[in-house]
Image 1 (cartoon, one colour):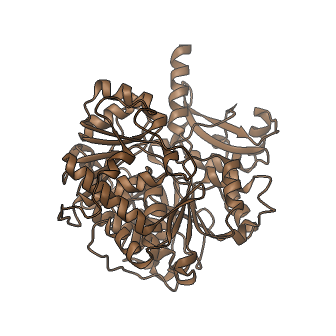
Image 2 (cartoon, rainbow, N blue to C red; image 1 turned 45 degrees about the vertical axis):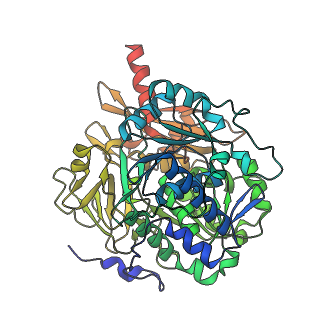
Length: 556
């Protein structure tokens, strides 16, 4: 195997290797508080909190948690949207050497119960809007410590909640009152090593128990540094006083955790916190800020923003220093639209298992349409035969993408079989079907589990998605394989149209005729007002597949 031959395509200011500081994650906040104590760390609907105050509240919460009995290795669930309370709970838990368990606020009580039991969570930070689910959860699962907040408690001018107003159960604690009882100089001095677990990040799942990727302090520091160095020009050319990050990606998702929150803290950047994605509310937020250094997003968000009626008049190319897309493949038409608007745009690829960071396009170098780029510093990739998982495929041929680097997880929590199945001889087997070209650029074709076999032919649904997305009336498209007695599987595409548009299935299928081989064309089209999405905005192909399978069973 050629060794990192893709380095020749790195930007002029990106190192081939990084010397990673051997520090725990919470020290990133200490550094920011020392360098820019009076700079706002966060801005939540106009209410600011400085780095010094954020650090002070983190230490007070760590002190209060330590007094309650939280100790190194304990699992502390953070079940919050983007708000200062999330950052306080996250860094406070890590200060004690506890392991943060990221929980999606949209999980049902049953989903939460499975994760709580799997990880043995002893402390849960949650908020008012999900308390009905938490009450159901606590009726079945024992959680010794439950801490509740109200997001608006950290917005000036809003009435502050109380245990009575939140109708807290006996024994549950109120976030703000708990914080008041803490000491900003905690007596506990916990020794934390780089290889100690810091975070359990659950991968997306719609059935069964999702897998919890165990990410160490070293993993998070490495991924944060890799993301920072890849976008080195941002910090080199933006004075620290003017660094602002739009943090709309949820922190409970690995992409938001690393590329928004930890990147911002490392860069001493102010985060504009957006607890939920509402396009009109977001466009209003954008009008209040003249300049945003960095905006990491997912294609669904970008699609809504770039196609908003106000997008052109806002001159978004002047507003964003860099717009980054990840979390799901970005349609080429959307990338071209961003660039036509003068927006500095980059795309990358990562997984929960790679602490969000893995591949990215150079910011000034060669960019190839449809590619997610080349490996970031200290990262090796191979494209191997999926049948044996070992044999390297020739350049330009499809295979499974495997990866090795300092950001690769320790393994799956309490799941040695899955760990052994996914990490072999130090290489993470991603499950992504990819092509690597002669320059080292990676093109993600699809997921191995999503591939459709129709009449003996392999069909990659993303290829069909890309074609249907080009139709001028189509807002979103996702393709699945449907069981078929004759062909094995037949191709069905779900389509969401742009507002005010109407179309027929025949019109969409006809559009594909000169763009796809006959065996790749959709045989049926189903129109939906909205396609199912994950919390980070990724279209959930597996949900549509499960719905289709259930429908077929019902019809039998």
